Length: 111
Image (cartoon, rainbow, N blue to C red):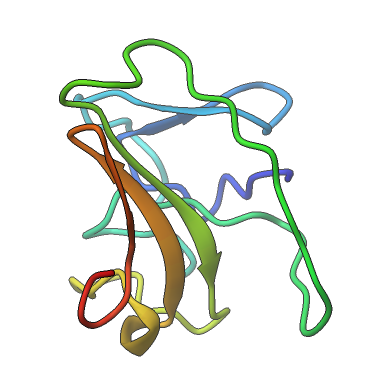
């Protein structure tokens, strides 16, 4: 996936090739764009899709167990980016999260 820098939250640092992301707890000085996530540390891929079957391979560096937290998934193009939204299908996001050594499907209710 090629990440879209115009959507990246200001605490997310993208690699030069736009294929890797890491969180930096200091706010980056980024231009405010309509596409940028404000309340959630999210970034979208540049390429969209409307149908079909898709899969991604995700590599996590550093501390994977313990208190690490991350999620990967897909989002509607019109997902809320400026206000807080839930990371679930009702909020336009279908994702799996890793939190405190557990994998959880972000559904309502969590499964």
